[in-house]
Image (cartoon, rainbow, N blue to C red; front, side):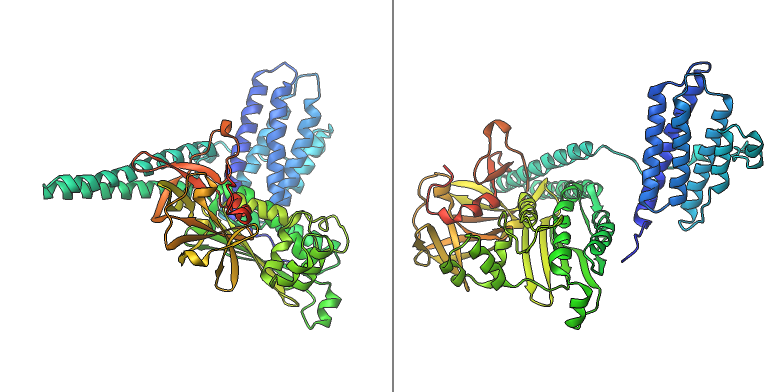
Length: 555
C-alpha cells in the first residue's frame, strides 16, 4: 500500500494551524482581561473548537506528536473550563508557552517537513502543573517566550482565504464579460459592412482583439483559482482500500497517476462518491483473493489504479483493476433472470450493450449482499452523478485480465464550450462534453420502428430524436439529407436531428428559475451576442427519451 504523501497538504496545514493558534491566543487574552471572573463558556468553547480542529488536521497528515500534544492541551482546557472559580495566572503562562512551542514547531516543519518531533517533556509538565505537583513541573519547565522572539508577528502569508461564493461571483461577472465580448464580435461584423474607413476598422478590430484576450486571461486566472489537484480526492481512498482489502481477505495495492491534474472545486466536491462506489466495486467484485490469483499465475497482490489526465477541455478519470474482469454472458443471464430484458433482447445484445446493464438501478452480479456491495445501487449512483455533470462513463473489461471504468467530465461547470445548432428557426446549445460526432445522412437511412426512429451508425443501431417534434416547434422543412449530432450521456447514446450546425462557441450557463420546475430536455440557458436567449440541451434527459424519438416527448 502506498504511503500518504503529505507534501501537497503541508503548506495548507501550516497556514491553517497558524490561524487556529492566533484564534486560541486571542481567546486567552480575552479571558485574561476578565480577571477575577469564572471562565466565559462561549470563549472556552471557541478555544476548544480551534484546538480540536488543529488536533484533527495534525493527525490527518501524519503529525502524531503534534496531535497528541494538542489533545493534551484540549483535555486540560476542558477540565479547567468547567471550574466556577477564576483561572490562576499560572494557567495563562502555561498556555502561552504552549502556543509558543507550537509556533516554533510550525516554523521547524516549514524549514524541514521531516523534522523529528517529541513533546514528551512538555506533556509531562502539563500533567505536573495541573495535578499540583509543582516540584515535578519545575523539573520539566515549559518553553518560555524569548524577549525578542516575535518573528511570528512579521511572518508573511503566502495564501489568502477567500469564500468560494466570492469566486463564483467573479466567475459570473467574467461570464457577463464573455457575453459582451460575443456582442462586440457581432457588432464588429456589422461595422465592417457599413463603415468604409479602413483605419477606423483596423483600430476597432485591434481593440476588440485586446478586449477578447484580456477577458480570456481574466477568465483563465479565475478558473485557476477555483482549481484543485485531484490528489486531494485520490488520497482519501488509501485508508479505505487498506481496510476493505483486509476485511475481504485480499491483498491490494492502490496506485495513483496524474494526481497533479487540476479540476474545478465544484466537480472535486462531487466526484468523491462515484469514485468510492467504483473502488468498492473493484475490491468486492474485481480483485480475486491471493490463492485464486496464484492459480491464474497472477501476483498474489492485486492492483487498483486511479489515474487522471487532461484531454482538451475535459478531464479523464479512470479506475482500473487487474482482477477477474466482467463476463458479458453472465451479465446477460443475470438481467434475463431478473426480468430486465427478454430472451430476444439478450440474443441480439452485443457485449458493449450487455455491459451497460450494470448501470441499471437494482442490478448486481454479486451472489450475496455485503456491507459494500450486492444491493445494485453503486453503479447507478455513479451514472447519475456523471450525467448531472454532462459527462460520459464507459466500461472496458476483459475476463481474467481486469476492468477499467473511464469517466469523462468537463473541467468547469460555469462556462462551457458548446455546439450551437438551429432547429425550426430556434438556436440551441449542446454541451460539447457530450457531443461524440456530427454526421450528415440521407433521410432514407432513418428507419421507423415500433418505439421511435433509428439509424445504423457503423456496426451499431442508434436511436434518434427529432428536436423539432420533441419541443413542439412545428415540422422543419423536409430535406433529402439530415444533420445528426451523435451525443452520449453515461452509458446511453443517441442522435439528435437538427436543421443546421452553426459552430462551436463558449457559452455561460444560466440556471432556470425554480418556478419553471423541471423542463424536459433543457438544463439551462445562455445569452447570445445579439441578446437572444438560447436554451442549453440536457443530453441526459434527451437520451433517456430516444426510444420515443418520434413522439412529442417533450410537450
